[in-house]
Image (cartoon, rainbow, N blue to C red; front, side, top):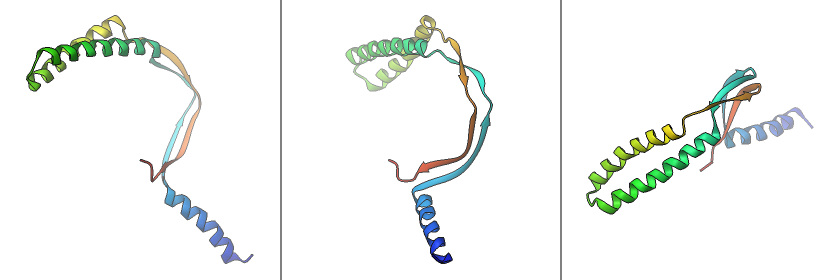
Length: 114
């Protein structure tokens, strides 16, 4: 096989790869470490609490108030109270999570994703 055929056989897959993927340089390096993150079980309890409170708020708003602007105000005002009361019941708890060595040089993103 001559030199030109080798170049073409190498260039076609590279060109196809670059056409399919967006390639970007992203040099990132992190040593292993213990990191504090929110406890997933506690956050799940908090989210369930807020979802239940939010359902009650929406039921009250749509069941008793006819004006959409007042409904929106009522919901936003009571959602803040629901966030505060659920956070008081389920305070944020941090747990240690071990993160290993992270090394990233190139990011590839599929160009034709939805």
